[in-house]
Image 1 (cartoon, rainbow, N blue to C red):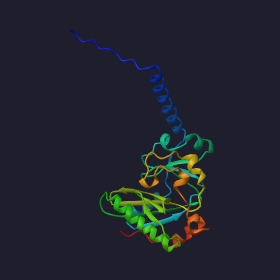
Image 2 (cartoon, one colour):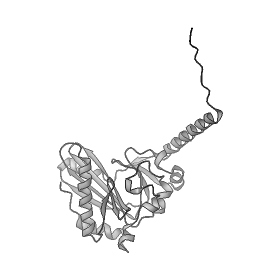
Image 3 (cartoon, rainbow, N blue to C red):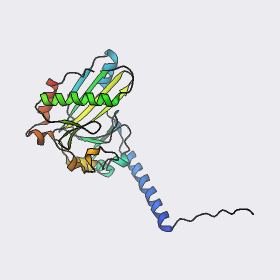
Image 4 (tube, one colour):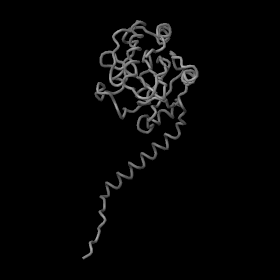
Length: 239
C-alpha cells in the first residue's frame, strides 16, 4: 500500500510572523547598502612602509570627525542603528581587523602600530603583548591603573576605556587601539546596537553603563594632551 504524504500547514500567525521577519531583514539589508561603506585606510601607509623596509612604526592621532568603523566581519544590519547613521550622514567604514563596530570622534586617541614577525598566527599572544606595551605607555603618560580585560580591551575597574584589534598577514602584524579619552558617549547608543558578541566582564550592560572615559578617570585630561604625551612616550613595538 503506497504511503501518501501530507503537507503540514503552518498556522496563519506563524506564516505572518515569518513573512514579517523576512521583510524586516530584507529592509535592513537594503538600508545597509545605502551606507556606502568605505575602507578605513588611515593607517594603510604604515603597512606599506613596513612591507617596504621592515621597520616597526607607531602612530598616535585623533579622528577629525565622528565616524563608525565596522570590524572585518561585522554585519551592519546587526550591529548598527542604520536609520540614525543615515539621518546624521555619519561616515561608515570597515577596518582590516576583527571585532564589532565602534564609534570614533575627536575625543578618541588612536594608537596604531606595525611590526614584522615571521609567519602567521599567535594572535592571542600578540594582543596580550601589545596590551602590556600600551598599558605601560599610558602609565608613563600619567594614566595609571589601566588593566587588560576581555580579549583585547583595556579597562579601569570594570569599565572599558579602550578597544583594540589585530590584523595578521604573512610576516606582518598591525595593531590598533582606540582610547576613550573625552568622546561623545551618547553617539555609542545612537549609532550602535548591542553587540552580537561581548566579553564576559560586560555582563549584558548597555553602552553607557559599560564604558567610561580617561578624562573621568584622571580628571581634566584632554584628548590632545594624551595624544601629545603618547607620541613622546611610545616607542615602536619590539617583539
